[in-house]
Figure 1 (cartoon, protein in one colour):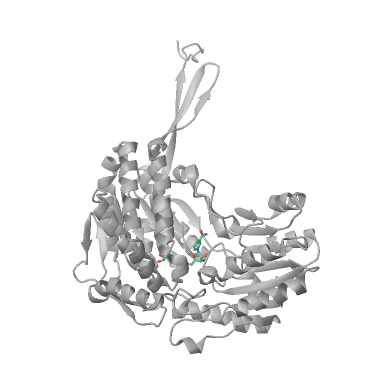
Figure 2 (cartoon, rainbow, N blue to C red):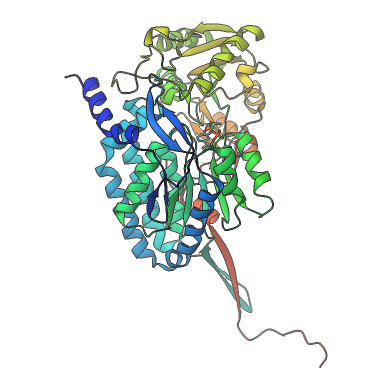
Length: 505
Ligand code: NAD
């Protein structure tokens, strides 16, 4: 049997229980399908077949999860850091033990190729280990000395928090968000994306198996407009962390206004990769291809705008065309697949609409632009490269979130900066040059939360992760995450030497 056939067989075994049982919620340590629940059908983007029914969380379901998170909070908050560290590291062990199941279920549920999802469990476990190890020091603050007073700060967990995640890499992003919240001492209500709910249920099972106390970790399935909305409005929830669309961020800010929610948003992007004439040609080419066509282009940090300097433009575009034509599109579980199906027919239609927009706006479709009919009913799009584009076109301004790259030519460093910054977004940017001074100048002036010089998206857990402009508010990673999930309190102690002001003596 080929590896592909093995994957299909194993995936079917793991998915069987989701197909035959309704996927419900995980609330207060119990898996539950509340009586009278409405359900919806979850399908796989590989061929649109059913992966089973999922509960549409109601406001009452969210209320129950929030009540559980509130009740569990004091005990979790007061658990000593070393004990939390041990528990969360144990959780990470159990994630790794289920690596194959997580990879296969995730691939089938969201369409991401197995070659990338194989790492999902390892990366998810690494997220937990990193924050678990920081748990004992999460409350540490600063000592701020004055002549006659000494100030020190302490951090305390903010309370129950809501975590709302998208469908593009649901397992990885859920662990990236939930790990620091738990390590900080917060309890969690997680609302996974409705289009990819399965790996969140695996996480909840692992939470139960690991012995994370009831109510500390709750998962409510359902739609953003009902379950997500209620979560962001709930008075018990002290902060909301969203990874999703910029429009969703705006909704959540409005929804959370009444209860003055602290919010952290990781939103969309239209990220530039800027390749100068003096770049290492081969490494830049590899990175340009990887950062838009990996993960089906459904990646917030994807470099969806290629800004290519005029001196190497023709040579670079020719080489790029060859590479894009050669990309292997196919079933998510085929180990040869480099680009899998897009998450959902609705999203597929949105991506395909840009094929027309490109023509209407006058760009050239150098490669792709069509549905891969030969691959059956799944959401397969041929990897697409638009050339002769300018930055005013819709394909250069709007987040397409698919394997679609828009190439724009520039002449000077100033041009590159102007085009790079001419966008509503500001998540990431990539600069390819062998001139260190130029790299430093670009790094200062390109408007983005994260810049990589001569690299693709390299992950470093202590580094700040997040965007500016419409790409987000706040930073994750290392201590930045604790700043979000914790309150800082200042304590000021007098040395008994200062003059206390006197009134009415
Ligand atoms: P989405 O905003 O449609 O959905 C994300 C989550 O928000 C889902 O769980 C959804 O149910 C929920 N939601 C929707 N409306 C809501 C509301 N009114 N109140 C509360 N919750 C609501 O995003 P998506 O389509 O699932 O994911 C793709 C988007 O995510 C892209 O824009 C992508 O760039 C972004 N993304 C950003 C990052 C980052 O780190 N910046 C990472 C991954 C994805």
